[in-house]
Length: 129
Image 1 (tube, rainbow, N blue to C red):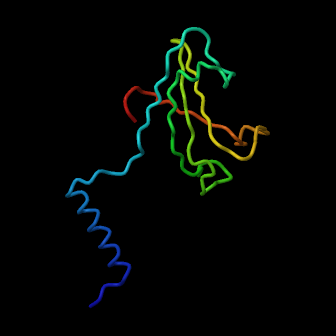
Image 2 (image 1 turned 135 degrees about the horizontal axis):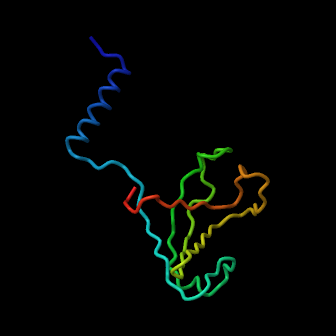
Image 3 (image 1 turned 60 degrees about the vertical axis):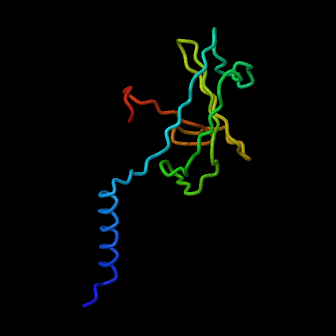
């Protein structure tokens, strides 16, 4: 008796999963990137992207994936990566995030509108997520 094709596929996937567990294959996870903030004395260049202080910060290239959270969903990432730098003065943190974009979208009509912009997420705890 032949097994239906769907059952055969299910058994194959199950066998691969069990083999992966038995071989202790690592699970896929995102690559951890660290942006180290350079220490500076005095005020941070919060609104001056041309400040020479930014040259003290190491640039880190961060790969991006498609935006599938907010409408309109975009399954193809228009921007493939951003470059981030960070500075701190012991009291404040400043981040400079840059990316190549052929269009300029600098207007926001509502809180729900996402044009050219970036968000930064910080963990609530000091432990690794």
